[in-house]
Length: 216
Image 1: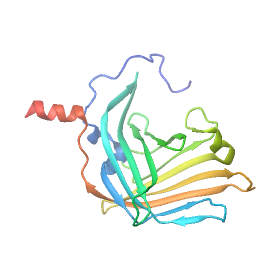
Image 2: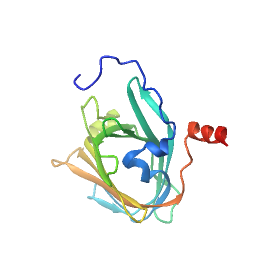
Image 3: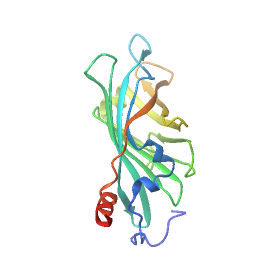
Image 4: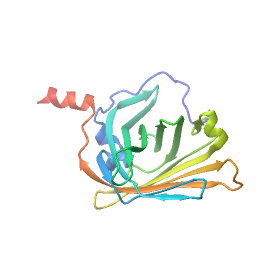
């Protein structure tokens, strides 16, 4: 494929193990966050349901990861969402945000416990304050995989999320999941948005912590 080297095995030398220092546009997302300035619009039999929600998301740095010559820095995340005043889980999601400094590639993986996984991709400059990643059903690089029931009843044709980091230290997202709902002729835009405020700092990745202890 164009753009990839012939040597697919040799990993980079002299890798900086401090992930927090090498996250590019993802750096402002590191930490533990909470947000209630939210809205979820999802399909129901009676029509679209508009639902506010309470979100807590933890984004912690992982050690640098290499695919041969490719080098990624990233954040492992867990999102937990409830409805206001309730304790029952409304949405649960895990995955990674990844940054490839050499190419400016951003990747976002997500897994939800209803039988769906997504790998979305995009590009941004290291200092970008807004970036977007997307995925499409059927793509073999940035794509979507769902259970047979979801394919039958709520087929996901595309997914995108736009992230914006703000001068006051908060960050926000707007997410659009385009569904074909069985029995409906037009695509349904299942949208989510929220603004998150940091409640705790990130914990440095294991190799960075070890290096700090060794130099002390």
